Length: 378
Image 1: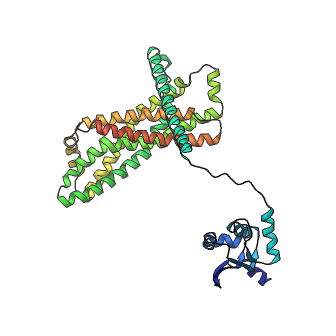
Image 2: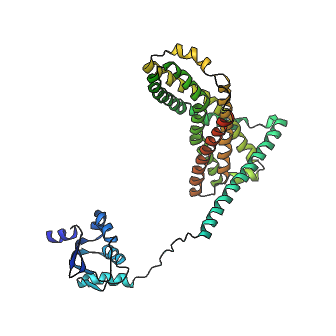
Image 3: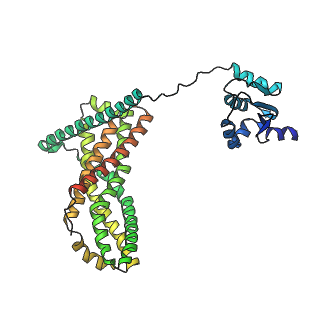
């Protein structure tokens, strides 16, 4: 019994010898599924052998061989017996079974020039389809806005209020925490550089300008896109799966008026407020770090900040945040309405919504940085 157990769990051995100018490949030990899984290195060595027709295969010292081991060796042989092979009869029956086994091989993907052009064309068409549908969504949003300006009693205040609460109020904690930590990191790293030049006081300029104008709006937008944008896309997708969108259509209720408009308006209002909140938390983190590393007090920081950061930077940051909110809301709705009534599409489009929102936010932020390069500098 112990001998049989030792044979079953023996490590596979691959040994290559030279016999009269011929290569002899000797397999020993156990070549079953358990041994193969526990010895990936020797499996790779077997698959990487440079085999020619003069090789002599010796398998007569193999202790244990099952279908998995025979299939592995059979693949290395190119699915035909070598000219010179030695094995026991019970092992040969396993190879004979694989020899008679037929299966349909998957077709290898052929990437020729035509296929590459076809794939590239699909990507371009998908991109333009997204752009075209986004333009339609924006046009419908403008029409709804004009309609609601003429009929203010039909503004969906409950939906707007609910979205502001879910995407704004509930995000206060995470935005404050991230902003505070980013402020500490930025202040600490800047302090190390400023100390080397004896310019510690300029930490206020660096923190004020970078946080109020760039990092605050960008952090808030990325957090809202990842947290609320994905949730809103999934929410619309679940309405699709539950056929609630069809029910709204059958009752004559406009999707854009009751779903898109409240989301876009709520995020356009929420994100500037969250940006101010994130700015405050990040500046507080920077103040704490500056006080600890550079001995700059909070009073000194607050008194010097207005002189270091002109007020126009606050308006630029808040204006960017409002645009970010509108874009995140439109992208969340766009991908939400593209969800098909199945769980796979729900997951894919939610992921696409987050990726597209963050990418668009960063692109727009870069455009703002270029356009307002000379504005608001002290």
